[in-house]
Length: 116
Image 1 (cartoon, rainbow, N blue to C red):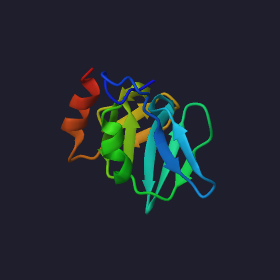
Image 2: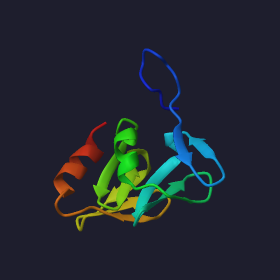
Image 3: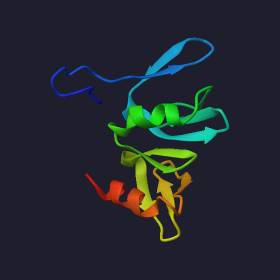
Image 4: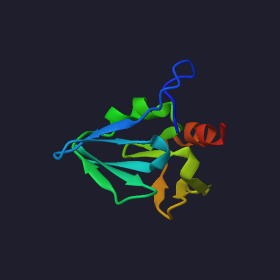
């Protein structure tokens, strides 16, 4: 479980608004987020994907402190679910999905993925 900071010890739950209401998810359960125009598809380890009417950039800063890395203009991945990075600049996730690393960000992304 992620915490907002060590002093408060309040668990952080990502609010995800939908037409039915707002869900709250533990970032540890999110594998990756993928942009699709003005929408974001959130992929989970324990439920079906969820399409949200928010842009990926709205989640980038919020999830950066939870181990998420922006690999491409359309992808934000949870480092905990990265399985393999090939020499061509692709990431294989533990759910068997492939995520592209942009050429411009490749060096920075690889360093962030190596960091503990």
